Length: 227
Image (cartoon, one colour):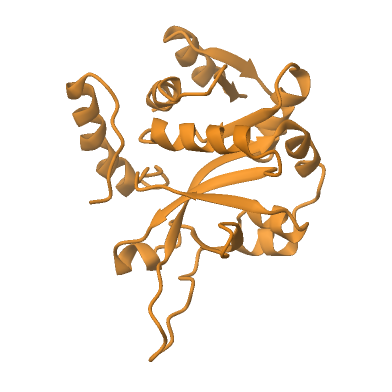
């Protein structure tokens, strides 16, 4: 799975360096085998963000970091490129992520599919595992968005973020991006029509397998459309 993620990242534009951060030698050895750069981190890192920050702290000569989780084998290179472009273009953005329109009631109700609501400027108002916004009977219908587990940061902000203690909302929802909102951070949300299925459960793995086989048969990665 990690090789698929690495390959998708390799096809993105605007990315100078790809590093697999892990504390597991099995993952490290597999990554070395397919030619990836690997950074071994402490097993004490509580989250993936802590792990990425521990690597970013030791490196110099770069201003931004994009964190792609290792359980996103169908992450779109187009999405990564969009985040990198926005970070490069707008110096005011400290943190950025992506979301796509939710198309089914089942997805809206699924707690493993994190939802996000955004303001008129495209910045996140809130993230939740519950269906948001809540559609009251007679209320005006509006678009619901699914959050994708990919983040971009300025290096300076990332190193500050991991110094903050987990917030109450973060601990309630088990969503660390809520820590950023609790501290007043504006999180820019880029809309994408590429649906990356995170592998959170065995059922997710079954859904992803045929899509990965399709990519391999095609000989190149393609954005996975929700349509």
